Image 1 (cartoon, rainbow, N blue to C red):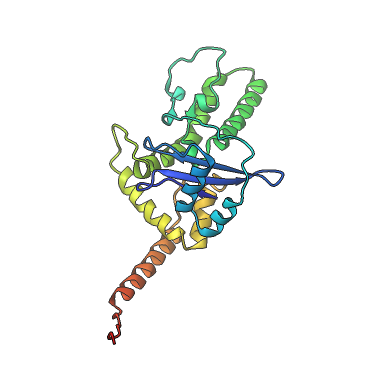
Image 2 (spheres, rainbow, N blue to C red):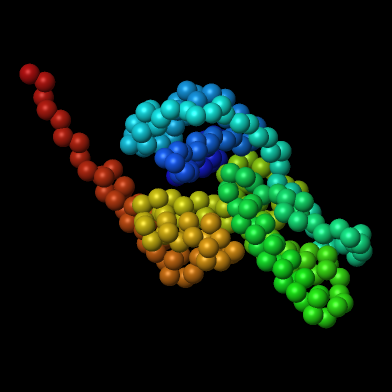
Length: 242
């Protein structure tokens, strides 16, 4: 369960089922917002962000350790694939290539994709006994990093007050449209499943909805808007005071 940070709420919270009946509770902040440092303050944040059934369960939880703190200054993608020459004997990997916003929870999946690239590059090199291993790995890593990095960057700009120069002109409109999509996904299980599977990098690395999915989101938001308009037009009945 995750309540992500947003443009208007710079603190977020996550609860992850672990082992032996334990759960990991994590809080995080973006745009220089500091997450709560104690368990009681973390529960107070949960009261603000989560439905009552979650906070009721959390109120009965017993901490089994002290909070651990990790600072993450900024996302970085080091474009080793663009170098004309690369030092021999060095193979960049994991966060040394791209360090993603940890609140999105995609870093380990991206590193596992790099492991697949490395395995294939080693296999091809052993078969041909030639080729530049690092260059081949860097090219393959760049292809899978690009769509996820773009999704992260637009999310950080749109929702987390991040800045970038120069900023592509289409990023903010894309972020605004996706914000509307997320609004529809809050109450439409089909849209929610599509988003979670793409965000978890299960179905594709590209967060690009198909035409039917876009149409479903538009129709859902239109129904919500029409319902809101009807409720606004309903007359308010009052009783005379005795």
